[in-house]
Length: 153
View 1 (cartoon, rainbow, N blue to C red):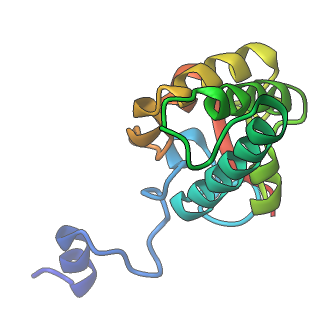
View 2 (cartoon, rainbow, N blue to C red):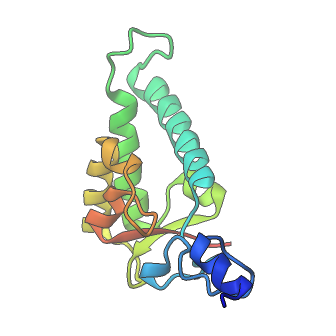
């Protein structure tokens, strides 16, 4: 005789009394929710949009980038790269991360530091590693850099 709990376990649905072993970041030992948990997709996207807009304004103001231009200027991407390397490498977050309550750290929880920030930024600017996730819900850019984007609030 199979219990109703056994049936729900076999069907793959989660009940409230099951451990949250399948949540994003579980394989890294991160909590399911709240501060310290893996950043979810929506705040990540909003943070990137904020960063891209700020970097585009900087590119326009300092380097003559035109918003309605022919689309061949790499200037906003270069500013985005520098912003990520400098801010993640020193403060652990970009402007967008800070607004969205996110912070980049090493898997151990230590600050990201310059080298992981550089690796992460190069891969982030290639775009593809950022849209492919591992089993823990991290983009490949974070996995290869040994970093995690966590919620801080």
